[in-house]
Length: 288
Image 1 (cartoon, rainbow, N blue to C red):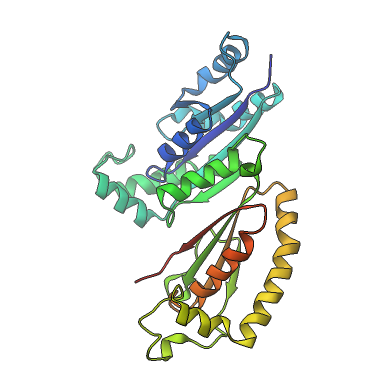
Image 2 (image 1 turned 90 degrees about the vertical axis):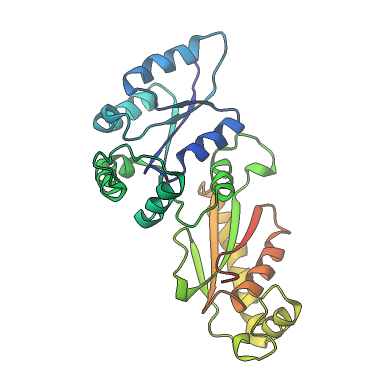
């Protein structure tokens, strides 16, 4: 019997489980949506002895499979005891955002027996609480696009040995008035720098404009800050990767997320782009 790498995708309805499992399929995982838990041991047995060898298995398990929620810990422990690698990914998002998604797609929530999606989601949060505690990876998809979630999943579970399997680093600019990104691992506040918002000809522009970039990056304090930041990242990034972290989000915030944070995030992205990581750049609040 050979070992199978098993990825269990679970989480709240509307949080992106379908996107996650499709991302695993693209990585050549054999994927099953809503496999009854009583069949998991038999499925693993078949997967290890069948003529078509299965090395990677992706499963979606959620509130539709009520039995799993009662015996999840035992089932996963038995699979690991059998020599298999098991990782659980739990997807979540703000309830308000999930309600909006259900409204946009006109889907029915599996627990919304009275038609109230919010009540169904709140019941689901409670039902999945124990499973969430078992998760190895927690991903908040409130502010993630489908493409960003796909990249996050592939960054975690890409089995290829080339540079694409290196830690993925996402640099995101934001405005503090709109809240700190939930997915942020490192947060840097650049509101100590002069604000281009108060310069008449710069106010309507963004940090991607060269005039704004020159204004922000030309300050001595900015260059001192970036020097300290780069030295810290040069130290931290290899440490995070050596500890097995597959995805790191660096968030840079100013007041509105239009000028200073954008210009500095662009500069950080350029610097990190020369390092052996998968680097992506996103400006969450630009423009508003």
